[in-house]
Length: 99
Length: 506
Picture 1 (cartoon, chains in turn cyan, purple):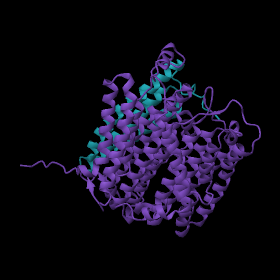
Picture 2 (cartoon, each protein chain N blue to C red):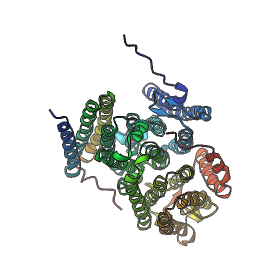
Picture 3 (cartoon, chains in turn yellow, cyan):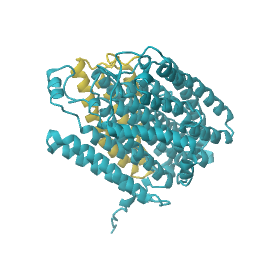
Picture 4 (tube, chains in turn orange, yellow):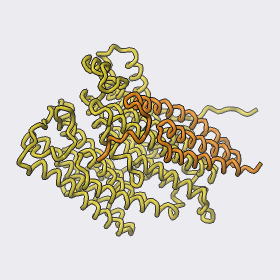
């Protein structure tokens, strides 16, 4: 199979992620969309690793996975705290900080 | 048979980062095992101790001319060491304000207004994990300015940012605002990191290398219009603009600066900014230098937009922290000018600018946090009216910092601006300097208006009090204010010093 198909898939995943961040209103879904973008980057890394014939890209994707896990820990801590305080995880409801 | 060689890490070159990480880990253990009453003292002693040891390590390494540590993923050059030293000094100054017990939440997990919160407040608790979080964040900052490949850059970026997202949510008062700021910072910060990472992946695809040097050497004349290269640079640029709080990716800055506990705001506006711009300069100077014609218009656009968005924002805001947030956006616009014309002189004047701006910012956030009423800090600058009658000293200190932001002669801000604008002017970008001067003039109105409020208003607001600072806070305020004036009067003290530090090593 043509290797560029993987790149198209990666670009599509990245775009879906960005669209999710911009359109969805639930903080958890926004966060999931960001994770999707990280996975799109992983797929691109692995694909390029294959075309370039090096292992750097695969190593990079392992680092990304670990960091994505750390990000989940911090992110869920913040989102759960907000949810417990407000009984809502909508990013539109968090709007006290206005001029 | 293939042999596996152990990599040469050069522990001495990495020692400042390792010391801070060790300090942070020990502080986490101290949180887990020490009794409640000892935790705060132990954590603060540990963090100041490891800051001092890390600074000693930086001093020991300072005469090294070049070293690629950890198999080339880290470049310890003179500029990198200078940035590390700057970050450590600024961190020390800003962490003095973390000691203020009234700033941080008693128990972050307790719901605002709940019985659990009242109990923990009455018990005199304090979320002293702030110290270990700050140390983790700092070690990320030290790694970010010396990182030489995109894996290390991404790891350092996240190590710098993740603890910050948490620290922003730890304010003792106005907890809903603080939590909201944490949520906004986290979601937008994670988005920026993902964009940065995708940019790195595209650059890897273009060049087949993850190191900055490798990417630069693969940019050739015939091939420098590849869409992978341009898209990759643009996405990495977006990530960096976000992290440094530069327009058009600045929308989080005012909200986060306002919602975060004031000492953390000072930490972000100084330490994180220096780290962000340090890495920004290194990536563009070392990694993308040969593609300069493709990214220059983007950076110029960001610089001009940032200056004017920041300057106009300072004029229309009333809240002290929001004014300083927009001021920091405007200063980012000035700082980014150096990336437009990368010469040794602009680089050195940027480093000088970062130091003077960082010190003044720490000082003003520290001073601002002393103006309080019954429910906490007073943000509204209209209520600062007549402050000079209540505390002439505090009013004087705040005015020094504001004059320095304005760029009035005899303050460090003037020298910094003069150096930077001259350096950019010499490279032929006179109209950028003109734009920067106009933006400074607009922002000057906002700063001077606060000074007028403080000194000339005849009706002081009765509910506002000035809290009596601790000795450490007083000393830090005095140091930052003195530094601002001394460098303004005798800039050669610092300029000669920063001249000895060479540019980034390619």
